[in-house]
Every structure is written in structure tokens, then in C-alpha cells.
Length: 421
Ligand code: AMP
Image 1 (cartoon, rainbow, N blue to C red):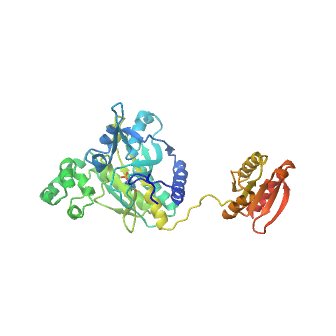
Image 2 (cartoon, protein in one colour):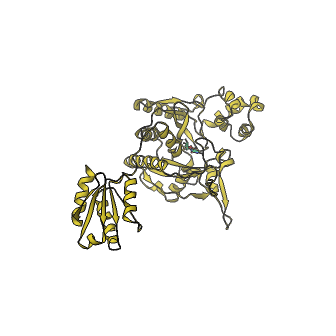
Image 3 (cartoon, rainbow, N blue to C red):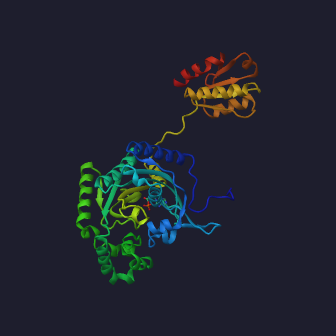
């Protein structure tokens, strides 16, 4: 039967197995990032529209076509955040984090919203793990972000990972590269898709992002940014690659990788699944963004990883995650007197780390034992009216069908031993 109220197009619940995978990713990322000194930040889901127009860029797909914008009753234009970096930079400036010892390392995790055409691995609400280093221009910061991205995915036991990397220069060398791109694309203008014709005027670098096959064939002949870097960008990129070599990371130069956001400078990278080049995450350096949004001149670098894509890949590679432990004990109760006793017993079992389930309603003893059977529980504690008065309970072995009376005060000790075997 089709239920009338479905989630909106491209928006999903994450429940059951998916939730376990999401927790797995979150827990691993938290453990690793906090060890490396990243502090967690909870960001608002709503931000001012201007923040993303200014940072992500007016000519990007995100700002042109994909933002969920709403106007409040007070006339404010707000956006459901499409990504986290702009918000992190906003928070860095708003809370004066430039006065803290630098660099400042921040991480966050949560849903992002983009009005995209839903397809495999592309949703309208998706979770991102995001971490950033603000206040360092060192190639070591770039490589730490790349290394940790790789480490998190490796610790999840994902295989077949590949890092694609490029440098897109900065305000010193990029204008010249853009000019070269315009000169190159001008004769092909008629053959480019409508979007690229617009990009040609607004920002020719964005053409390199196009997925259209006809455009891609032309792009493959275009000049490459790495051949047009200024000395500073060249030295920086060379150092990043040297460090990656020493870390023995599987990277590949991708001369047309530009990423879909305008704020990047110098290093850009993506981490992909080798066989289908599906991007699990991507990031790069953005040395001008803090200043652009009104803060002090602060170099920075960061990455965002897509949780749903990682979950899909974990399933694809048949990687198992631990869920909640199976219950070993079931607490059944009969009569009102047993209610409080049952709750207290559950609490003691929690402290003793014995996984337990219970019956909450006023079902018959038979129904409660049926439920215990369905849950494949080995031991059932029956708190009956008569026994509870004597401070006793019945302990039933479900496999053998035998039972005996025990003192309630001895129960936790007995169950702990039984559950461990
Ligand atoms: P971006 O913020 O565009 O740099 O993307 C970083 C990562 O987020 C990508 O590599 C994907 O894993 C994930 N991602 C981006 N857009 C979507 C989407 N619409 N649906 C699911 N995952 C996405």
C-alpha cells in the first residue's frame, strides 16, 4: 500500500541499516578528527542568502540553480545551507576565532540541501562530514586534510580509493589562465552547451566542470592550469605533491579538476572510488574567502565528504558494522507490584552492561514469553506478584524450558555470568 505522506523528492529517512552506517562514519570521524585537534561546531541550517552568493559564487550551479531560498514573514532572504565551508568561515569571523592560536581546526556533520535532479548518489538532502583548517598557508595543512580524508575512509575499511588533485592558482596567476581559456574556447562557443556559453561570459573556469559529453571532448584539449601557475602557486603545489609522495598516498594529477565552487585557490582535490570515479568527497584551499566575507586575511583549507555515497559504497563492498548488541535477557512481569522492581532491575543490568529487553505493557505471561522467543533471548526473568513480595524472581532458561527461583539481589550477578558465556 502506498502511504499518502511520502518524503519529498530526493529527500530520505536514514533508518535501520543506513542509520548504523551513518553512526559508524560519525564515530570514526569524531575519534580521528578530535585526536588531531579539530573542534566540533554545530552550524545553523538556515543562513542568509548573501553568504552563499558571495562565497560559493554567482556563476556556480549551486547558487544559480540549486539553492532552497525562502523569504521570512519579516522579508529576510534565507537559504537552507547547501554546504558548510561558508558557514564555518562566517562563524570564524563572527566569533573572532582569528584571535585564538592559529591554525583553528573545525569539524561539523549534518544535512545539506541542494535542489538537484535526483539520481543515483545525488539527493536534495544529504549529510556531509566537513573539516577545515583556518589560519595556515603551509602545504602541510593541505596534506593533513587530504591524509585525514583518506585515513577516515580507510578506517571504515573502504578499498579502491583514489585521490585526484590539481592546482587552480590564485588571484596572481588565475586571471591569466582564465584569459587563456577564453581564447581557447571562443572558436568552439557554438558547440558548447547553453550552460557553458553562459559560463564563458561569467567564469570560463566553470566550463571545466561541465559533465556534458560534447563539452568534455572540447575541454580535453583546453590549456591546463598547472602549466600556468605563478611561482608561489607552483612551489606550493610541488611541496604538496612531495609530501603526498612521502605519505605513499594513491594520488593522480587531474589537470581539469576545478570543483564546483568559486572560492578555491591553489590546491583542489577529490577522493573517488577508482572503478567508477564516483566522488566521495572533495575540497581544497580557499585563501581569500575569510577576507572576502569581511574577516582578516586568513589562508584556509578544508574538505566535505558525502555520507550517503560513503554508505552506498560500504554496502557495495559488503562491509559489516556492529549494531546494537542482541539482548541476552528478557524481563517479564506480572502484576502492579512488579512494575517498579522491573524498572530498577533494568537499570542495574544497564550498569552491568547486560543487553536486555522488557515488556512494557500488561500482556499475559504467555505473550511476554512469546516475545522473548521471537527476540531469541536465552534467559527470562519473571517478576511475579507473589515472588516480588518475597524479594524473589523466577529465572527461566528458554532453551531447556527449565526455571528456578532466585533472590532479586543475586539476579544481576547471576545474569552477568550467564550473559558472558
Ligand atoms: P561538494 O560540497 O560539492 O564539494 O561535495 C562534496 C561531497 O558531498 C561530494 O563528493 C559528494 O560525496 C557529496 N555530495 C555533494 N552533492 C551531493 C548530492 N546532491 N547528493 C549526495 N551527495 C552529495
